[in-house]
Image (cartoon, rainbow over all chains, first blue to last red; front, side):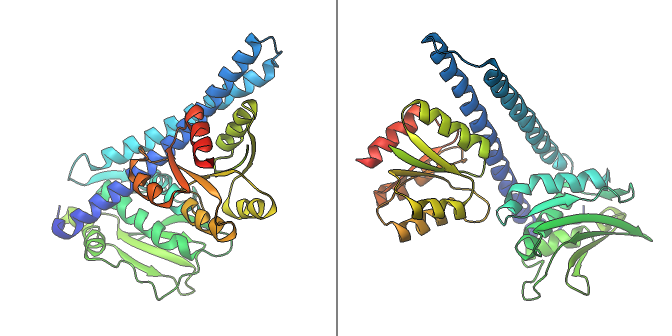
Length: 223
Length: 118
């Protein structure tokens, strides 16, 4: 791939580090809930041993809570696994854009939530395939979300949608009130990642949307 | 002992409160910093247990705001980091704070609560 790794490499490692740290927090939160619920189950057993009647419905509730946290953990681990495999190969891959955007939203959810912001991916977009590096794509979209999160409107929700015109795909982050004094991309590494994907980032005319436009077939692949 | 638990994971904090109640510790719980500050203003707590990573006001910032209102308030921070070791130096400096890594062992939490109270 035609990437300036001297500039993009450290940025990519930073992104990988931030995301895996954030996901480990999520896993620990889920484990903490499982731990408390299983601890409460033990408390009920001890109480039963002392002759105190325990409502079976309470036990069912605890069991159901543990089961739901196990499912949550499975989803988190699944996302982590997909993220880890996004850099299996330096070569570009033919990827479907919708699921990749959903993965970007999922792995950055906790970082974005620190601004009390949620992210929704609009499923109405066309099923498009993109020839690109999944890791760099996730990195770029993740950075766009991090950049936009402090500048949402009152609803505090970013909606991601996409559309294709000619040979370009435009990804829109809506629900913003962008402040022009903040520039993005800022660092040489971010610029190198954007350049590798052949992307352009710009606000719309009303500063309510951040638009990421990339070729349907990335520049790096063509070379 | 009367404690305040603050964590954005409602299921975690409510269940922990229930377990503490079984052990004779009265625990109020809230899921964000603003509600926590209202609680702190409204009554006296022996210990406040704060999650560090929360939307809005982070646990660290919340701890600072609590100390502006009640400088002597004892605080235990919880972290989803794999280890609380990173925070030990800071905790040792303040004398008013402890750090625990999630998942929390309830006996360790109670021990820390008693320790910080004294």
